[in-house]
Structure formats: structure tokens, C-alpha cells
Length: 285
Ligand SMILES: [Zn+2]
Ligand SMILES: [Zn+2]
Image 1 (cartoon, protein in one colour):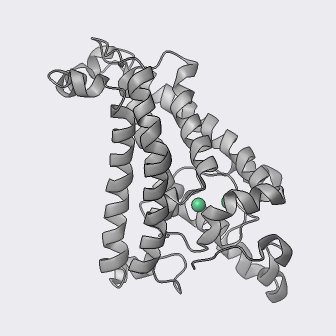
Image 2 (cartoon, protein in one colour):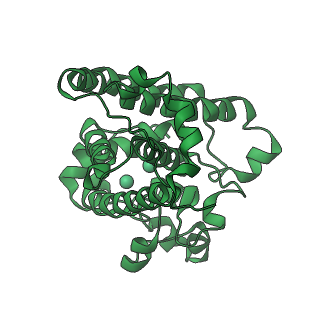
């Protein structure tokens, strides 16, 4: 199989394209597709959190074992997500319908190498850009209190909280994910795979579970759910969203094992904010 040949993916591309051109080329397709991925992952983990959390398998792999995900907590997060979608995403999608031309669907599929290479490049760029945005949001008190503290209303994350964001952060994140593929000629199929990867990884790091099949057990410098869970528990640690080489470089990477090794008083304080930074901010768990 020649991975730089577009014919490898051609049958798949033809299968999803032929007969669905009107839907796939509509400017409304990307937002609807993105929301579908959101709600699919949310639904899978709502079922796990509400109905399977007592199963030995899930109990064993839950990271913050003392925290229970309740229907009330899920609703608190979903409510903000739905509000953001109605107030910001929907009007943006409608504006796109008027202003953005229909997506051109090429006859040929992208080559596997081209698709994987571009998705990897966008992954690495997003991860690094978000690290610095995220760091600024935690180090500049005004930014934290006004914007990013919304995401930290949950100190024990669960999948739905992946989208628990202040509208400014939602625009920033959505803006980068949407515009990164503009830096080079990107096939629509590559664009949609990138959307799927970016959203799925964001959900994965928020699940609250350290599953034995998760990528961080196999891929070096991949941070995964334990690192992001640590970030919600101790907000001044683990800023990089998907990988951890920048956190390691700047000294922000800390694991649960590291916390356990610290003296009791040090572990108690480590990675927490001073009271004046967080006073009066909302907390759900
Ligand atoms: Zn988070
Ligand atoms: Zn944060």
C-alpha cells in the first residue's frame, strides 16, 4: 500500500461524498458536524458517569475516587454549553451560511500521508499555542477571574466539562481549530478528521478516568486524563492540553505520585491559588 497515493482513501471518499454533496458542501455542515461529535462523546460519558460509575472497572480507573458525578453536576455544565451554543455558535453558523461560500469537494481523496501529516501538524501547533494562552489565563489574575475560572468551576472534571468554557475561550479555541487548516491547502476530509481528533482528545482528557488503553500509557509526552485531572485539582500545574513536553520544560508537570511523595504541608499547598485570586469564584465540585 502506497501511503502517498490518493487512491488508498478514494473508495472511502467516494462513499461519503457521492450523493451527499449538498449536505457536505454546505457552510452549515462544519458546525453541525462539530456539535454532533460533542454530543456523541457527552452522551457516552453521561451514561458511564450516571449508570456505570459503580461497576468495579470504572471505580478502579476513576482518578478522583472521592468525587461522584451527579445528574445535577452534569446539568450545571450542559446548561452553560447549551447557552453558549444558542447565544454564540448558532448566530455564527447562520452568518457563515450567508457569507461563506460552499465547500469545494475535490474529486480525489487526500493521500494517507498528507492527511496524517497535516492532522499531526495542526495537533502540535494547537497544543503549543493553547499552552501559552492557558498559561497567560492562569498567571494574569484579571484573565483568570474574568475568563478561564469558568472552566475551573469543576475541580474534578467529567467529559461534559470539556465544553464548560467562557465565551471568549470558546471563540479562541474554536477560532484556532477552525483556521489552522487554512495555513496550507487542506482537503475537506483532512479538515473533518482534524475536527474529530481535536474534539475527541479534548473529551478524553476530561473523562476523569485513567483507562489502561488510553494513549498516555503508550505514547511518550502525551499527557492524557491524569495530567488534565491534576490541572483541575491543582490549577497551577499541567497547563499543556494534550502533550506534556512544555510542562516538563517549564517545570509545571506534576503527577499524583509526585504529590504523594511531597511532605504533607507542601502537598496540601502545591499548585493551589492564593485565597484572594479565587475568592467569590463559583465552584461546583
Ligand atoms: Zn479542563
Ligand atoms: Zn486551566
